[in-house]
View: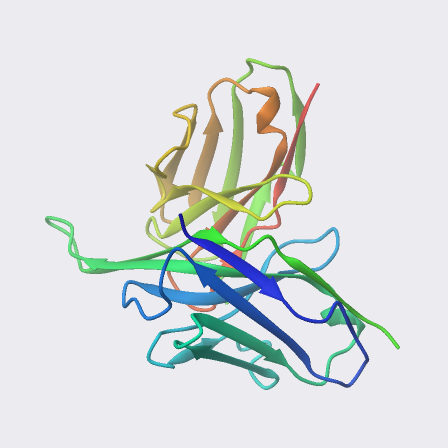
Length: 131
Length: 107
């Protein structure tokens, strides 16, 4: 059974850098069948996708956060990490790491497609930005 | 970005009722849509992928349909354990975006 676990400080000061790590067990971040993603949820609000990384180190970020986000992967530790710089109170949220299953195929009589879905999630960790 | 809307934002229904949630995309996304269930204090859980495919282990009372811009999520017979917020999510274009959620309560 795949499990993901977020870790990192629960309190970050404004203008500093938020750093979180996701440790994966029961599966490998080196698998080519998945991307590894971060998603956040401000208290009482909806879900925002932050970005994802492939085992090769290739990343894609949400343009709304791209200038401040770095996602990295450490295959030797079976972990991937998030750094978000210059944080403000608006970055206060529960941060989730998640596995993204992807599959490229061509349905009969249709055009090629790629499916993506978040199939395993960490429990989430609340990060509060406050002085 | 593709904007996702959901209606209603919340609903109350009785045990055994049929519950329907709609999700609308700001542009055609074919059936590139997933549905998640989030219980209070928990991470979201995948229920439906590719618009209508039931994730392994998910009860068959959950179903999804639709294509293009309009999608429907249905619970055929509401159970007490279905109390949660339900989110749709598109993956036709990056960035992935989620709907604002629909909170389901027991009447």
